[in-house]
Image (cartoon, rainbow, N blue to C red; front, side):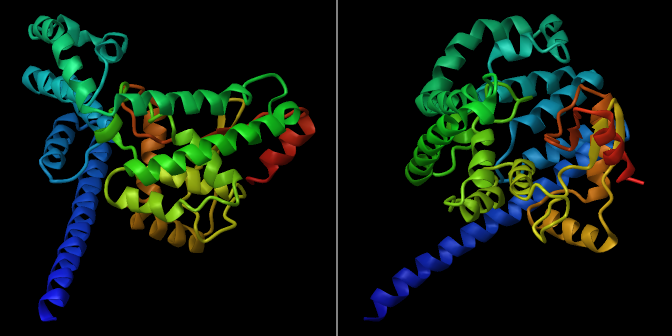
Length: 334
């Protein structure tokens, strides 16, 4: 009788220990990445590269965008050996060689001595990677996104095609729920990332699901995916704030939208001091930087396009049908 109790309890403790360790590693990784990005903001690219390398040796899930930013730092620092290393890592994570060659911000690497060898070995590397990754699932997720966007992008969008959009959305949500149940969260280690500058394509479906569907039961699942390093916290915050589209109406606010852009001019959002405390607490709970750091990154990334910090929806571009509405909106920031 004792054995039947002790053995499951041991495995339960082991499981809990592994979960807590994974979350601890995630927060360590997130902290180092934030420090690296802040060094980029202050144009300390050598220090940033050191911090990236410190993050990459942790036993935590990594994101391709971080390797991409480290790659940019190595190019700026003229550290050819690190440039080669980061490119190898990106290719092994599913990045297409065309994504590198067509990227005008980093394609100077094709003139470096090691590039010929990379091109010659790439077909074999790519073949192995597509076997290792769940490539059919990656392509299916791309199809779901195309289905999500097809009717939304047609003239009239929701006003004309609302019923059709909702019908297709239900098909997408049902299929995603099945994928989550069968495969777990489809992170980069499962489906790769063909372009590290881009978000994984199905994130837009998650946004619609969480924002539009009252039947979505995936919120806890997504937060767990964040804390295990499978789902980028900035995209989780993005879709959570999308659900509460009003400004600061919920204690769940992550402060994703910092600025509103009207005719090229930025108008900063102005949460109260009390709300800032709530926002920063929420952000810290999923490993995100503070609002102050976030704002610095957003403004830096607006001017320096070489880096990608995944600041989706940080600046909301506003359009108005008449000058009176535009004036009233601007007056609200005074």
